[in-house]
Image (tube, rainbow, N blue to C red; front, side):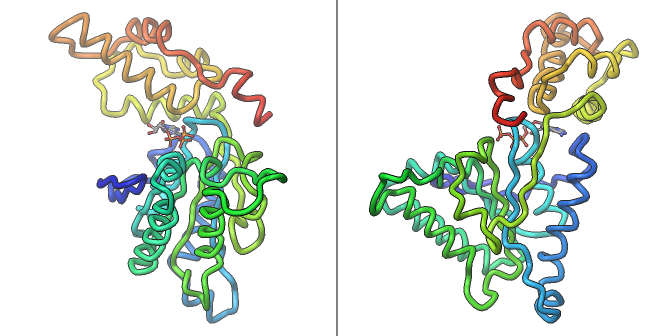
Length: 273
Ligand code: ATP
């Protein structure tokens, strides 16, 4: 991976099976993204205007970034990732230049996925009283120009946006032909937590007393990222106690549960429920 002013190009393989839960969302995305990327020419012949963008929104740590990566690797598309906060802090004028360069590169290497992470920090809602030429407005119009494209130039390029706060995203981005598919990525329920835990411990030597069903029950309001942290913490505890630790035990998970906190508390979830 290379990082330059908020732009990352990454080719690490990620698969649908690496994401626990979200069965229906995975299916919706598979249909929404595989066709425009893999059948761009057929769709054009049939006069179907492919979706330019998919916006993933929902609470933090619930696999929006991972979904975008899977979309790219599973369609063999190149993956370009731009982080909103990093982009916004770039030198004046550089943000738009970087964005245009990303889209140019993406078009040249189509099929491609352009991932715009933390999109609300790039293009928050415009304040009524704001006039003229703020950085945010220039970034917004750059994205709109690139997404609107000309004469199907965007074919084979899918824009995937992600945000924790869709209420703060400018409405102009949500119009048809732009992010016309909006997908809510919810926090994991009991079954999803069980699946995520199973994925996270797959490469760990586990003691037979580790009860993933019980852990799933005890991790209400944990995000996928919290569950990944929990598994990592349990393994670290096993390592710390015993220099020749062979397995991670339920006792390690019990101790890890005292350290790793659920991040999807009410104050966070108020934006989604
Ligand atoms: P943020 O909004 O904070 O950027 P995000 O929604 O983009 O978060 P990811 O970055 O995809 O979330 O998730 C963080 C990590 O949590 C992943 O690298 C993965 O290890 C784990 N994770 C999250 N959700 C899942 C899931 N459904 N299945 C497996 N692992 C998950």
